Amino acid sequence: MRRLIAAAAVAAAGLGAARWAAARGRMPVSARDPLAAGRWLGVTINRPPEEVAPGERLPEPLTRVDAEVRMNRAPGGRGTELYARPRGRTARAEGALTRLRGEDSRTAVRTALREAKSLLETGDVLRSDEEIATTRPTLPGKVLDLALGRASEGGRL
Image (cartoon, rainbow, N blue to C red):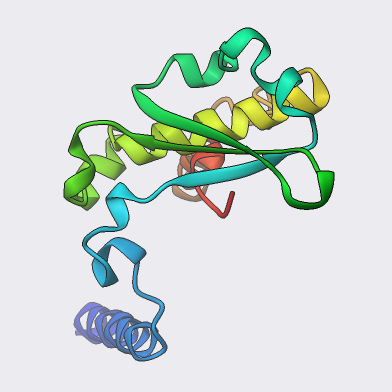
């Protein structure tokens, strides 16, 4: 009986949180806007365009993904704006299952932009400590391992 009450309480809390988030407009962008999958992702790199793409060659992380890329000078001489979006499947938003499997084309482009920015500004791609995130046998440890493994994919650019 206690398990049933606990399960009902967890379900009610989840439903309440979902309704609260929906009411405050905190739904995923792809749920609000079906054209979001085709939008450009961008970063500002603190380097002139000549250093970002010497001889029209893109930074190495962006050559690994199938993406359209464009560059602009940042306003006020503050570097270069680098934009990218996946080719092909941009007309429709990819599903949550695709994102969980790590096969989302926007996630790959987002990661490539982050890596290109890091590589051009610092000379190295910054990552979390791998030796700390090796094996955690507990459930919270496995969740932490998953979060650390996907850390470069999320957040604002």
